[in-house]
Length: 73
Image (tube, rainbow, N blue to C red; front, side, top):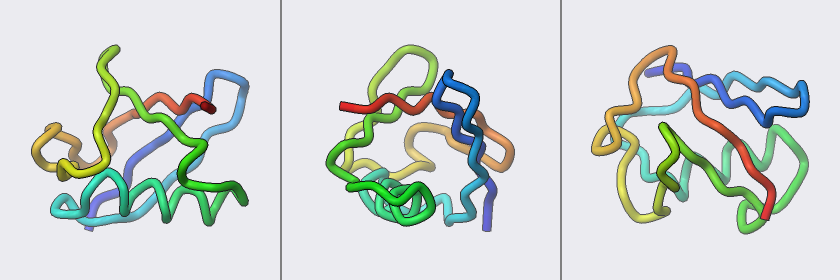
């Protein structure tokens, strides 16, 4: 189990617990439930690159304590 920090650059920071084997799409569903919005409206970036839904967090080298940037689409 890892904990990922998500920052939307507007002052909202959320901690999400997940597995490194989870896909980005599954992560977005958990994040959307915490934020009260639709997963399709969420775009995540790490280091300036947009994370695609079908790839796992581990493949993007997202580990415990990693910061992701949240954008609304």
